[in-house]
Image (cartoon, rainbow, N blue to C red; front, side, top):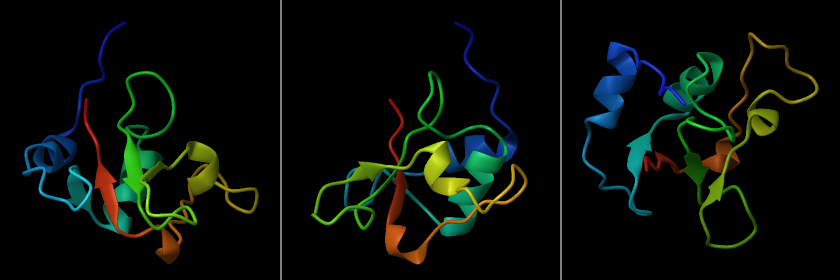
Length: 93
């Protein structure tokens, strides 16, 4: 399967050091929304894994899915990153 061609913005994010508290690349809520809106993140094959420690009721890091970000009240042009989901990190393979 062909890997996606990342934009310069995504390449810039992926070039950052993996110095987040979970071992991934720290990102902002806006960056997480952009990654989902532009089709770079999610729970499908070859998509970037965006995780949050605050997403669950424990101290584990949980992956955000497209359904988490584009809930039933949102359309495909609107992303909602709940503040409880912070901190956010990308965990590239």
